[in-house]
Figure 1 (cartoon, one colour):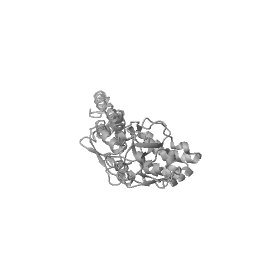
Figure 2: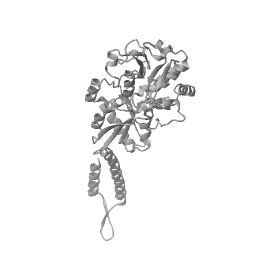
Figure 3: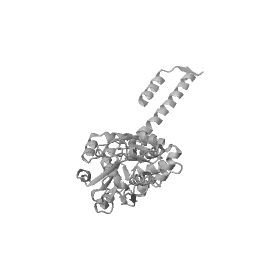
Figure 4: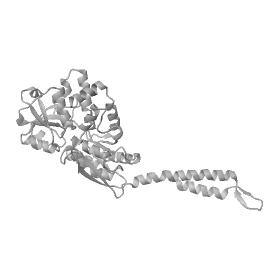
Length: 367
């Protein structure tokens, strides 16, 4: 377009009407000069518009992106990040090297806060984190630790179909067993994590006899403690669990956290909401489990330029639809049910605007 514009300008100059002064010198007329001035401005605008797009598409050439995982190696968030990394690279202009790094801490919050603290704000740092961090924000909209409304959302890799289970040697086989005299111990990485929130729902909303044991770097460490008999169970999704635990019936799944059924959870496992009668309690439960729809969120700093965020969002969406990635996900039993960046941000905004009575009671539940 720019070349055509300059060519037309040159052609115009060869055909313009001229006026002559008293000594016979030829000049373009004033009308022609005005036209040329307008043409020059337009050409300048075309140049200005052309440069940013070219600069944005070339930005990642020769660069590396750090994909920070807010949990230790070996868990579900880590598995998704490592499976997705080469495909995110392949679908970004410039094909940058995508390096996965683990940053556990604060139930996943540490990796989120890092984005607007010490991380570069140019789109070379992406974070995926435990979606339980979002629940803390949903229940404390007036004093959030991180502003999820304004973050740059790439989207989510899948919905998190979470459930609570117990080791077969724990003596806990059914939902009703959680009302017995034995207090069941359940592992979690920290207060902001999804597992902690699920345990808090069981304990404080459903009044079950359970106790969270916190401080694990990630789910891998929780699973080791369960096998050693140091914990009775945990709440989480199928991703990241030892493959044979469900297949060989080494664990008893007693409840699921979402009303939607999933192939990941055996038939007949009840939804936790089936045991609630108070409409307010049901609304509280829905708020506390909304983060599960954002199962594996990927975000960047709010300060990343809009054009670069768009590049990342498009590459993220394309990577999740890549046939080679889907085959790897199938082989590794990783569910893929993507949510776009725009849809994720809209969902976060809507939940943060929940009625005060609901958010206040939800906050009491996960205190």
